[in-house]
Amino acid sequence: MPYIKKENRENFDNILESLGIKLVNATKGDLEYCIFKIMKLYMKTKEYRYSILHDVVYAAQHCSDEFRRRYLDKREDEARKTNGEI
Image (cartoon, rainbow, N blue to C red):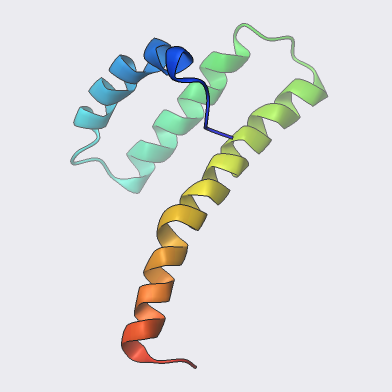
């Protein structure tokens, strides 16, 4: 999952914060491009094997799951409380 040690985060945070600033007015397509490009860049230094490709896909999926858990699910819970149970 995305919870790496704080000292390891320093390797990425400045670059990602800079990217975040550029994404302020981005579209969903822009975000998808950035995610896909990061996945491709990661693979540049890796052996092109099924297990590694699988790891890349699942890393993206696990991040998606965590984002859903922390943000989308909370939004759905708020809507249910506001609008009532089905």
